[in-house]
Length: 462
Image 1 (cartoon, one colour):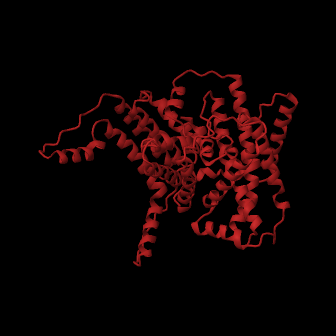
Image 2 (cartoon, rainbow, N blue to C red):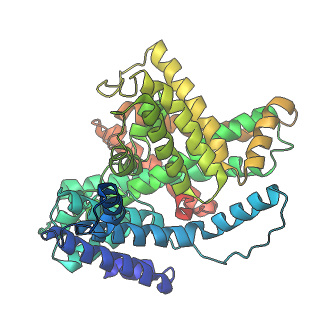
Image 3 (spheres, rainbow, N blue to C red):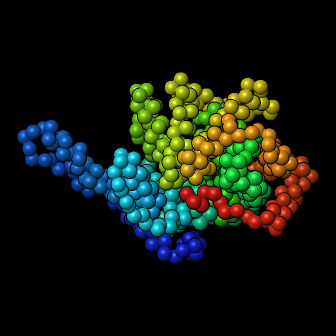
C-alpha cells in the first residue's frame, strides 16, 4: 500500500495504469500456470497448406498463448500510447511532407507516467517466465502488486525479475545489521555520485550543449566527456540509492552497474552498464530471435534489432534510435569474430597494463561519441555539435579553470571505483581511512545540497 501512496503522490490519476497492468498480469499468470486451456483447433479443410497457414495465424490466440499475447499487447500498448503516440504521428507527417504532399496531423498533450518504461517491462518478464515454466505463478495478490510497485526501484529501476524479487515478499524478513550497514553505504555512495558528481558536471555540460554553436572545440570535447560522467553518476547513483534503500527493508535487488568506464570493449561495456535492461533485452528479445546461434546475416539482424529497440526504449526521438544504432555498429564486429565475451572471466589488475589502458580509453571515446546523440534534443543538434568539433576554434574562449573542479571530482570517483572494484566502495579495512571517507563524502553531499540546486534525475524522463 505504501508503494502505491508513493506513486500516487506524483499524480494519483496514473495509479489506474499501474494497477490495471498489475491486475491483468496477475490474472494472466494464474491462467498461464494451469493446464493448457484449449488445444489448437483443426481447421476443416482439405488443403494442408491452408491448415498450416491458418494455424500459424491463430496460434497467438489459442491456449496459453492467448494470455501471454494479452499481457504483452496490453503492456506494450500502454507504453506505446503514452510514450510513442506523438512520435509516430509526427514522423508519419514528416515523411508524407518529404514526399511532396501536404499533411497536417494533431498530436495529443500526453504526460508520460513516471516509471512506465520500467514497471511494464517488469510485469512482462513475469508472465513470460511463467509461460516458459521458469517459475510458478503466485497466488498471493498482495505480494504480486507489491513486487510491481516496490517503491525503491519503481520509477527508474533496476528492472527486477520476478524470480528474484517476488519470492522475497513471500518470506519472513528480519533486520540484519550487516545488510542495513551495506544499505546505508550504498545510499551514501549513490548520493555522492548524484549530488556531487552528476550535478556538478551538469553545471558545465548544460551550457555547452545549449550553446554548442559558439563553444570552442576543446569545450565541446569536455562537454561530451563530462556528460558521460553526468549520466553515469545520475543513473548509477539512483540505482545505488534504490538498492541500498531496499536493503534497509531486507530486500536484495540486482546490481545495475559495475564500473562501466573500465570496459575494454563495447561488449564488456554492455555487461557493466544498465545491467537490468541489457539482460532483459538479451533474455526476452535477443535469445528468442536466435541470438548468435544463427547465420551471420541473422546474427547481425538480431544485434541491430536489440540495440535499436533499446535506443527506442529510452525515448521517442530519432536521437535515441541513432544512439542504439551506433552501439550496434560497434558491437557487431566484435560479435562476428567471437570476441564479444573475451573479457568475461578476466579480473581487473591492481595496475592496468598499457594495452588495457588503451582499450579502456578507446572504448570510452566511442561511448562518448554515442552519448552526444543521446544528449542532443534533435539529430540536427547532434550533427551541429560534431561539426563544431572540426570547424570551431579550439582555444578561443576556453578556460581550463571552468573544468578543474569537475575533472578533479571525476578522478576521485574513478580512483575509488578502481580501488574497490565497484563493490561497496566505502568498505576500507583501515578504520581511519574508512571513517575519513565517510565524513568527507557526507561533507561534500551536504555542501552541494545546501549551496547548489539539486538537479532532477535524468532517467525520470524515461
